[in-house]
Each structure stands twice: as C-alpha cells, then as structure tokens.
Length: 264
Image (cartoon, rainbow, N blue to C red; front, side, top):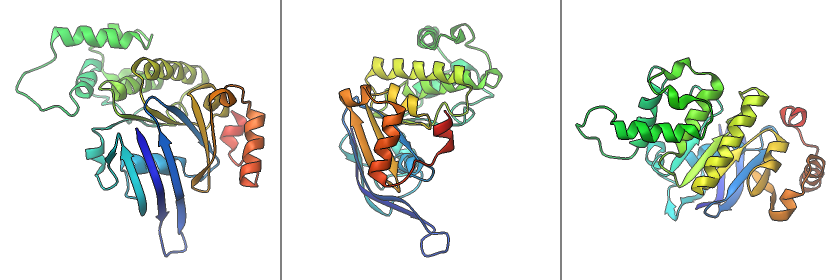
C-alpha cells in the first residue's frame, strides 16, 4: 500500500545550515499494516511523513501509494489517497463551523460539488452513529461549534474526519503529543478501534516508546534519516522499553537521544 524507495532529502544544500534529513530511506507497508515510528531528535520521522504527504519534494527516490507513483504529485493531489492527523489539535478542523459541517466536508472530500443545499437528515443520522465510537457524547452536539470543544475532543473528531472516506493511507504525526495523558490514552484507544474496524494502512509517529510497542503490528525506529530497526509479530508483542533501547544502541552505535521519549 505504501512503498518508499531510496528517498533522499537535504535541507539548505550548499550552505552552513545543510542538513540531510532522509538518507537512502526505504520502507514498504502492506495493506492493513499499522506501523508505529519512533526515533531520536532529528532522526527524520516527521520529514518522512511530510515527504509522503507531499509537503515538500524529495531530492531522489520514489514514493508509491497503492501502486501509484505520487513522487511528483502536489500535496493537494495526494490528499485523495491520504488521511492525516497533525500534532496540533487545532489544525484538522474548522473551529468556526459546526461538528456536522466539519463531518460533511470530510465526507465530500474528493467528490464533485452539487447545488444541493445543506446536510440531509439521513446524513445527520450517519454522523451520530459515527461519533458514537468516540464515546465523548459528541453525537448529541452535532450543531455545536468545533471551536468550543476541548483539544482532545477536536483531535478525536479530526481522527474521525481523516478516516471517514477510508483513505489508502492514514498518517498520524504525534497526534497525541499535545494532549494530557488521560486524553492521549483515549485518543489512542479510538485510533486502534478505527484502524482495526476499517483495516486502514497506518503510519503513526510517536515519542512514547510504550505507545509504540503497545499499538500496531509493526514498529520501526529511525536514526540519521533511515530505518535501523524493524520489529514485527511476536518479537514486537514481547518487546520492552529496555530491550528497545538496547537494540537501538547496538544498531546505531550510540545512546538514544530524545528526552521526551525517555521521560514518557
């Protein structure tokens, strides 16, 4: 479902601020894979996600989604294949619009616009059923402005919107990092439910090692712009944070450097 082949990306080339963010990065996700991504500061995690999403062009290599070469496609053209949830809960929703209006926008993504006005009663019933999976009572607040919701409620709604039309690929960029621990756990639980229910191919960056181990069927660790660990199956299920740190040290030849990950 996703194939990243020999990707390179350098920022500010030829200057004193030159930084190679991706270095011969290769990664393949099969349909239905739920892959968690972890790594130290500057490992290239977010750069990889942004490259897949088309936020910026890569220097070399190819990116294929469901067999389609999207390497040279613009960000808005790739949006037909991708659902995305950002770290900032404010980015994925329109705060001045109602909950049902936000959902209607997500449901109509990629479809041709018509002159038919408003949201039908049938659609409202569908949205109520969809919102029940969040277990936040939002199904009774369809006409509430999204700007009145808490950060956790907005992030849960964004997750629902991003997965509403069953994208080929769901990208989660530290989508619980800005939330308190209890709310983050709730959003992660909802993430797991939606991904499993719809069989979504998912790439989730997290700074929390325990979350990376607990969720998904595969874990990759990045260092210096490429993947140094790829753990799946029974090995992942039995993995501990201490073992993951030890594996990182052996594979990279250095200590893991990410205070947020270690503290969490």
